Length: 341
Image 1: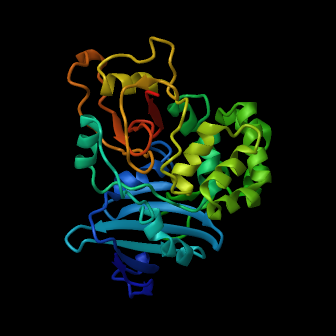
Image 2: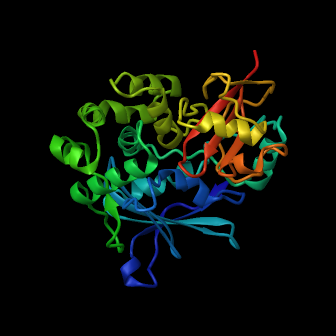
Image 3: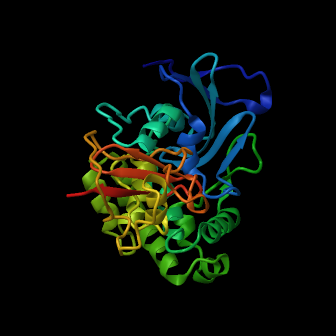
């Protein structure tokens, strides 16, 4: 894996001035699939995609920044350009953000659907943004509601209380800082569609923002424990953060609504929830010997004997570790089926 250092380059267009970095991963990367998990709904104002690439507006430890990421297929390289006080920080983390730290050594596919997913998506990796609050607050807002409701609420709050992102895109926003989240009155959360229980959890998180951001540099078990030490942050919410901010491939989103049923149809051709099993304990005779579980965003065919009306083509399984883990490519959620023990 080789790369060049971040360098200043004279822009062809003055409106696109900024810092630039060229990163050569040594293999093709599906940057749309990798970075897609940071998009909280089609109207997420902190995430934009156009012909120039994928745009991210972020508050970093060095200050606000905008990152534009583009895959140059003929050259086999990723071009990152950044603006604002956080530009260098964002460019320094570009390889990790695109999964450079995700080790697939020892992966073995023990199910035909899993093997198909891996063959179809060799460029997918687990990202590591190093920004905990950026993923934690949306995850809290997404608790126990439909994606449509959660995405609308997050979009409303970001537009109303966030700041414009630095750089040339006028429609790109920064999510509120911890201080800005703390200043939002309770009635504004309710007006946006966030229930008092979730709003209270958001407040507990932002009150501990410094301690929670430290999790990005901690061993994964300790990081997950720190997240779950906050009342209202359970296994599902911590997993949503770990998958994005910590580069953790071993944190499936247990308990995600409907996913266990969809996995059953996808892999076995029938509903696995009819016996009362849940997504974190559904049993199936499968063994995986790879290093750890992770998820892969992809679309693969359903099990051959699945009823046509019941197939779920937006569910994609991949096995790494002690079970089958899948990502719902509609919602971005992941979950797992454990092997029979």
